[in-house]
View 1 (cartoon, rainbow over the protein chains, first blue to last red):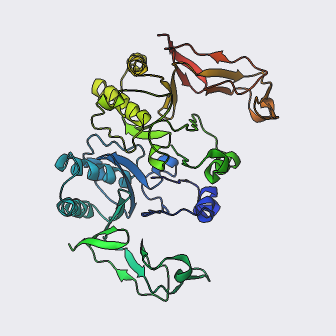
View 2: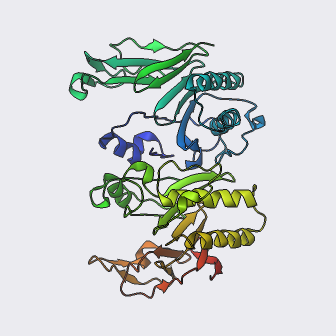
View 3: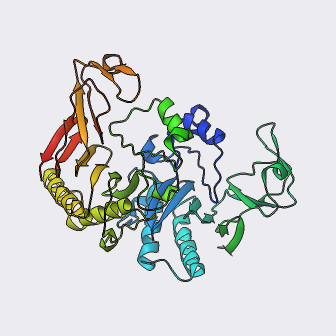
Length: 214
Length: 214
């Protein structure tokens, strides 16, 4: 687990520059560009947030805005900054730990429970979530989440907002399965899956291993 | 709070390069180059380690080797890697939280308690420690820790291991107080304070605010 954070705008960020140039290979990556609605612009309020649970680092990013989040009991997971997002994350982990003080035998059961928690957060507003323990990537959609899974035979993809085309055949090996989850589709020549309100997915090395609707 | 970690040797590290070139200004910085004695060379075992307590991020680095550390009860603070250092850190935070579930009114009392905990860890081997909540920097010496406090009028310093001289008058403002704590003295034309076995210090914006001997 590693984090690269910068409270500065991404277009001026030396950290973002490093991440672009540095050939990181990772099984699970969470990236977040913040539109600061709740809480000031500073390092404490910069996503993603990380806490340890069950001897794993859990990393979290949120898109959306919540109301009434001050009433959430975060227990032993205290927020360091003052965003709705970090408080929601701390509340979620506290719920999970209360239910599963130790790593659950049956992860599917735990995923169903986390899905329920996400539904409760959705009642507070817009809650689009990415959450990972470094192996699993959990997603929850309120209104803006899209995904695409790429596997062999890999093709080319053209970015929507830049005149850039990537040939994934050059970047992958035949057994790779790569899923990208983003607020909006990033390419204009591929079919992205628009997630439904309340949809919850768990990805494991690129494959969906758990899925549930609202 | 921000961390830059690399399991690769520092001389080849792109991350170390970024930190060198990037003009970070910070009130408290902890840096660690690992000689891997306990636990494999990987990201999970790379110092510094961080956990949240009292709504603050606590960051920790250790120099030395411990034995019998598997018996330490780390409670809710589980190690993610398998170093003696991270387990000692988790044990220490668990002790502190058990004694002070909430931020203590009297920090001096808490520092005295942390000092006691460090003494217990010293019984397990070599325990040189740097610990910070982002404002306070706590140090504990078993055998190898030196410090120097620089303030106006600032002078020049020559690095021991490179032919580099820094004129701190060019790098500071008159009210700055800058303390460097390191395993060994880093400069050869200044007087470093060699910390004593069992010595515990707390620095706050460069000044010693708490000190105790074994």
